[in-house]
Length: 119
Length: 99
Length: 136
Image 1 (cartoon, rainbow over the protein chains, first blue to last red):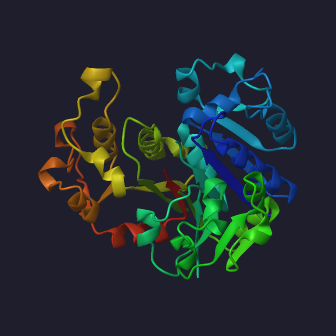
Image 2: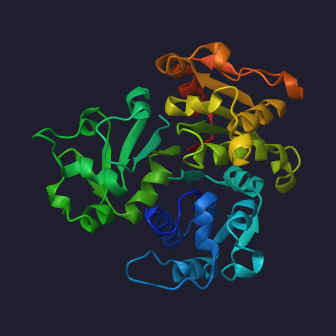
């Protein structure tokens, strides 16, 4: 089994790109791979807890909580999150907050990296 | 040979980067709106993305989400699901680019 | 062990955050060692292709106009931190730009290295040589 690092700059609501990233993360975990997910830029919107779930909008808090409970590292860029008013106390339980060098270190130890740029 | 998996997430007939990547260095994975390239013809013409001599994969989940059945894609496109994509990433590609 | 990461920018600046984030992530390679074992490190290469070369125009004034750091400033910081910086010469030509319009150095802030105008084939080689690609 290997390690997959997924980086995503895209926002939670609108493009469905984060939905894709999270489904990929789930599939990799189910196959026994280690998974790190890095959220940067608008991707940090996924990190905020308490998002109300509507059928018209992407809602991933439950899935992310399960991914974290299953051993995946899901980490948001601290500066990107703070710039959007998302502070440590606002994060989904277990979700990390780090600087960008964490992502590069995750890439260093990864067998594969899927980096998804922003819109 | 080590291959780059190029994820095409938009429906465009051309892409500067795709046009210039060395032949044989990459395969294409159609994801999100990129899956339209697998099945939709413009003015009767298949997407040029399918005619590059590369392997082309399309995500089944993104196809069916958009009302396209896997049976409708061009014959040279291989349909994969997320499980299959994970295997491609680990077994067929060494690196990926998301366009 | 050294692992190479190619950071490739193909988006225009300002309207999207992509190029700014790619630059800040490339520059973050300067502090990645704190997370790694002794002797391990990341070697970045930063490349601008397609519309991304427009990030490299000189005399950006977004700081005065909008109060945000310019991409010019980030590019100069990348040079200051000795990140190998490649700019696609075919795309510079395609947009009718000349070398004197492009950020080729950061001598004003003390950088020793300069940008390199190179053919796309050289950027392709850098991507092939890299262990991972951060393309945005």
